[in-house]
Image (cartoon, rainbow, N blue to C red):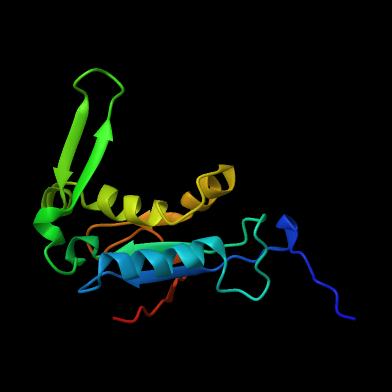
Length: 145
């Protein structure tokens, strides 16, 4: 009989990955990054333990969207005050709020619990090609598409 092994938080070994967003589709990139942040790519995946790795996304300003999402998709935020609804198109988010745009896509694919809050802290998004994490020696992560 086989026994299921459950990873303990002290046993987790983390690695650093870097993703180049040049000419990548936002949704495909976000789903792959969310998988790595959760730790689902590891054979030691345990749903209730933060066993994911760190991810650095560079060249976020070169990420694209498919179809006509550029003009038809909108992002909403409300301040909880009357008349406090803020609406931004994908084009505005991509041009003016690039880092927030990419983080919002990836955060939506993580659990909305305290476990997800810890996993969100392992994501670093940068507009250009430079990042301050060279000392961690990140490994290149290849995303299809």
